[in-house]
Image (cartoon, rainbow, N blue to C red):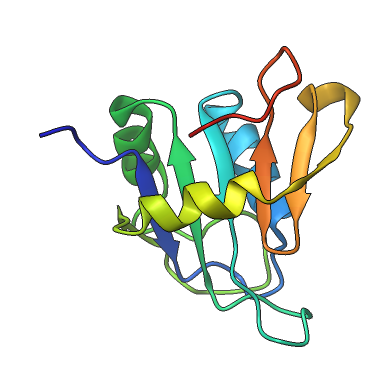
Length: 131
């Protein structure tokens, strides 16, 4: 059976937006290694629920994420929450959410797809990644 590529990051700062989670991952050396980030938020949209899903392009990068962030504070934030990284079990639902996103151009990211709670990177040709 194929190893999971979607990871769940628990105990992230509740102030982090999908774009901020993406930035933390890219700053940690994961740029180009994931296809989207999903950060569920509370109904008001002012904060997230304290976790995120990241779909990595390879199982090796998913494991590297676990090694890099598990047991540490995720990103620079005013929190002492210790991140827990585990395999996600909702890959099908995340793919459906990614397909419903709208495109927002960003020069550095070669296209960023954003949907209320989902941030998806686009392939270099400008089409949505089918994670």
